[in-house]
Length: 318
Image (tube, rainbow, N blue to C red; front, side):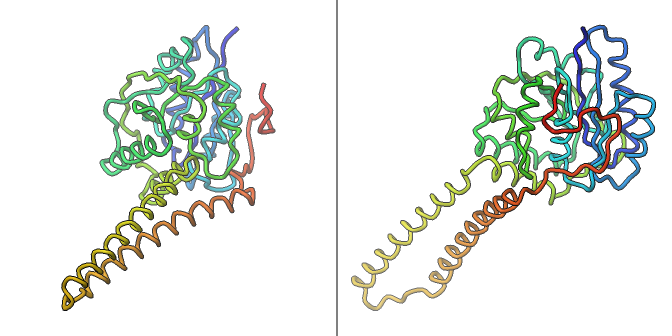
């Protein structure tokens, strides 16, 4: 009996590339004697006609299962939607821009056959802008510190997981999903497969500075309280410095009665301490705001319509 591979693809502004991705999946697996496949494609409120393109393809290929979200919820939420409706023995997450070397998927799932829980494509050189490279390195550094992930953990846009990992990830229902954080909570049994990332076929990345900052905030406010602990530590350090400075000032005044107390230094200290307080209050406010939104049961995503989808309930797995 063939094993089923589920390809999870969030789609946004990819009407010119998604056909190539789906053709490559079919060309790679159509003659396989060991694997069959399905594709879960989620259109994340895309402004182009990628839904129409996918709809036409899905009419001729029932393996293509299409979900159209009511609006743009972001790539992480769209990814969660794809994972929710995957039924495969192995789930493969890819992007819709053609950069993932899908023809290497059999190499990617080899470690899963050998007992690993997750297999990640390891790109020695990432084909992306300098801005996004800097953002990725910064996010990787903060993720390692905040989430206690292994030092050698390397995220990628092309990775595969066992079914139990997928089922565990979709148990997270809060409105701020962060895939790397969920993976780090689930397993450390991870393999890396060297591959070469391709150039983007068409268009440019949909990530701007605002979206990268939002993704970064999700990384540590959803899965770590370390920022709050760091804030507390900074507060204690500043309090100690202020106490010591106060004692020094009193002693200097006793020893040298006519010494002038500097107005500029006093204002500088006040502004510094005030800035730290505002920063910490803002961080606490970010946590409280997310708690408030989660309590109100804000959805990760809202489905407008589906095509070829047999499973209609989130927890209904074959």
